[in-house]
Image (cartoon, rainbow over all chains, first blue to last red; front, side, top):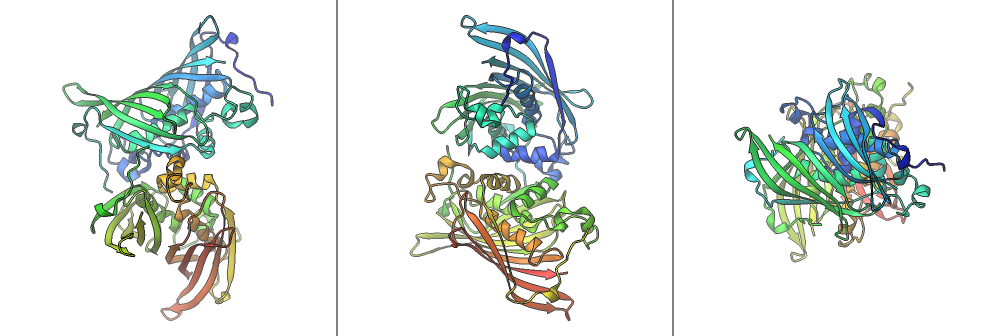
Length: 143
Length: 143
Length: 143
Length: 143
């Protein structure tokens, strides 16, 4: 076992990382199984066609989950506690969309005489047309 | 098909609903598969034992996903767009914990001469000991 | 935790509830993984094209599973034991079909001097063209 | 592709086949994702402890799904249409139980001058203590 833990000293404002994936119908069904979110807009084609979207929409939290993957594995990676997060949902995500989550360090600070080390990270998600679908910001403690 | 859509007029400040479930290892694995969040704190027992938690911790977004289920199916239910959400992570969630998400309407307002109808909803999650694990607030538009 | 249990006294003959969803390929694969039912009619496109159906058919039990969801969560809901069920399969279900399960209370009776409280519920499933795909009846005890 | 189809002429009354598996928590979560059956008796430990069962119970339809696997792959196997089925639920199934489904041909007949060929099959499921958990019977057409 050789796990590289996040090291606060190595991060600087402006550091960036991205992660991408295509949203599949499987993602929607599995997310429904976790969340119990069987809103018909997500799981009922006949209903979804009657809405302004004309087809099923992915769960907003699902599009955000990719951010969770990026934060947990890459930037900042293991050894981090999530303190808080904000999300603004800008556009719907559909099955087949390819999402790219980007994390960018926007602030670095300490509290309690340097014993608590924080990063503020902007976490935006765009689709394959580079349209912003979710705008976000997360505050983490590096252990 | 007989889907009851959310009706802004029927909601009032103080309306509440809850949803409960036990967090399982399956939830963690499925959420990792969706999010690519294979942070060893979630999926690596040997590593998790070396941390302050002494065992694997569930993804923070996973504990929030139950809120998604409550909003999407019950309060306010189908016919809603999520505008934004805030989350504060207070305590870790472990496999076997039984979570209860509670949604409570805290504000009701309109914009653009009444054509856009909003609800602000507090979305807290507690565990089986009634300890607050996630504090949240979401803003939705009722279509 | 705030769980509303089924109350036999509150049900009457004629009570109805419905639930709808679109059948996805994911449902078929997950059901196969649970049931070990990898009949090629469900999971083998090349074979399915050689049959009278010309494409893959969903598992019959899968179309019935939606009835399980309706009974377990809505009518009659938690606090119920399933005693027996009958099913007649009328039409095949395909990927992309949107199914609606309807439960309707058709009989209400007690046994053993009122200590065992039963409901007989008709459980039919129709597709998006309102064609009956599965006809069923279930007997439950309300605890 | 070399698929052996069921051949009505080769079956005789008394033919038997079995299939076994251990019921896991994953089965319960995945079945919930397909069926939307998040009855707290299945997914909420804290609630389940307050019931007569003292722990979570598997979905009844889940225990039957193993029968579907046996019918679809082995006896009678591919090339069969399910006409109807009856189920009696005798005992609860818990996580960790190992179930064995047994199919036994109990009747063989034709209709419409031999063009429709039927089998009636008894489909019982027992647990690891050989206790009958589900009693069933299915009628199939061999194509």
